[in-house]
Image 1 (tube, rainbow, N blue to C red):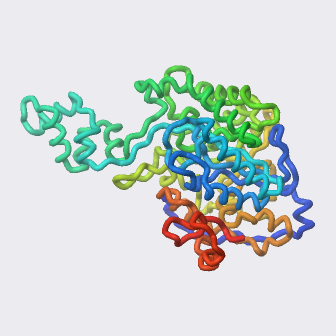
Image 2 (image 1 turned 60 degrees about the horizontal axis):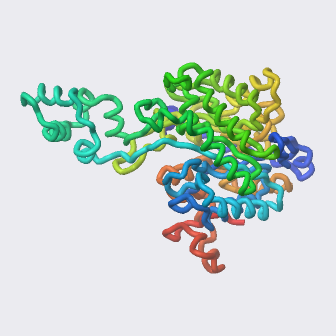
Image 3 (image 1 turned 90 degrees about the vertical axis):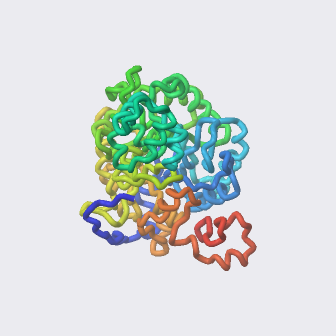
Length: 490
C-alpha cells in the first residue's frame, strides 16, 4: 500500500473508557432512526469482505461464524459484505442475484438475530461491478489478447523495414520490444491492459452491455433488494463507493454522452434511478441507504463539493441513511504482479480509505471526519434529517462520542476496530473498556484481503490455537493451513 512520504509513526490515541453509567448516558449508546428501522445505539459495523463464501457465492459455516461473532458484540447495526446483485461468477463473495441464494442468506439473518439477542439490526450491502481481468503474461498478451491495428503495423514497418508485415510478424515484433519501448507503440488502454490487466469502465460505450447499464441496473438492484427483504434483512446499503459500477457513474471521470455522464446532475441520475427502483420494490418497513465517497482522492476525480451535492440529492430522494467513505479507486492502484488482478486500495486513494499508523502529520485517526462533517452540514442546510455514518480510525469511546457531540455524524462506524475486538462496543457499554483489544491500524487485515485470503486480525488469529483444537472445533474454525483461527476469541 502507498504511504505518505513523511512516514510518521503515530501512537494509538490514549483512551479513557466510560463507566457503565457514563456509557448509558452517552450519545454513542443512544438510539437513532434509520428511516423505518430503529437502532438501539449509534454503533455501526461497516461492510467488510472476509472471503468466506463458496466459490459460487453461497453462505458457508464460516460466513455464519463471522457475522455471528460480530453480532455477539451487539452493535446497533451490522452491514453484511458487498454482495453481488448479478447472477454471474465472482469468486468467494456472497451473491444475491438469484432466489437460490435466499436459504443461506435467511440462515445468516437468523444467526445474527440469535447471537445478538435481537439487539442488532442487519443490513446487506449490494454491489455491481464490471469485468476486471488478471495481469497477463506479456507473451500471452501479444499472442492472444492484443487486437492488432494499422497503427501497430505501421510502427512495425518503420522499425523493421518490412514492407507489409503480417499480423503474426507484428505480434512477434511487439513481444520482442523492451517494456519501455512499448510506450511509443501501444495506446494508453493497450498499455494498461498489458501492465495492469483488462478492465471495463462505465465509459466503454462501444460495449453493448456497458452502454445498456442504465436500462438494466435499476431492475437488477431492485430484484436483489427484494430478495434481501424476503431473507429477513432490515434493509440494504446500496454500494455507490470505491472502484465499482455505481461509484464510477458518480465519478467526475464519467464522460458518458447518453445523459448519464458529464455534469454531476447527470452523473447522479442512474444512482437515483436505482434507488427509486429499489424503494418501489421493497416494503415500508425496509430501510434503504447508500455508501458513497466524500472524496475520490484521485487526480481528476470527484471532490468534496461533489459529495455534498450528491448527499443532498440522496437525502432529497428519501434515502434512510448515508454512509461515507473515501478513495479506494483503480485509477491510482499499484501495478499488480503477473497473474494477479489490480487491487483498488494500493494507491494514495486506497490509503485515504484505510489510513495506517504510518502517516503524515495529520495522522490516521479521524482522518475522514472533516469531509463527512461537510457533507452532513450540506444535508442539514438543505433541510433534511438523514442520518450520516462516519468512519475512519475511530477506535475509542472518546473519539466516537466527540464525533456525535460535535455534529460530524449521527452514527459511528468502526470496521478495523471491531474486527480487532468484536466486543468493544459491548465492553465499553458495560464499563469494561480496559479489556478492549485495540486495533493497531497496521492493515494486516487489508494485506490478507489484497491477496484474497480469508481475513483475520493479527491480534487474535493465532491466539489459543491449541486450545481451540483441543476443544474439538471443526475444520471450518481454521484457515486452510490450520495456522490461523477464523473468528476472534470470546
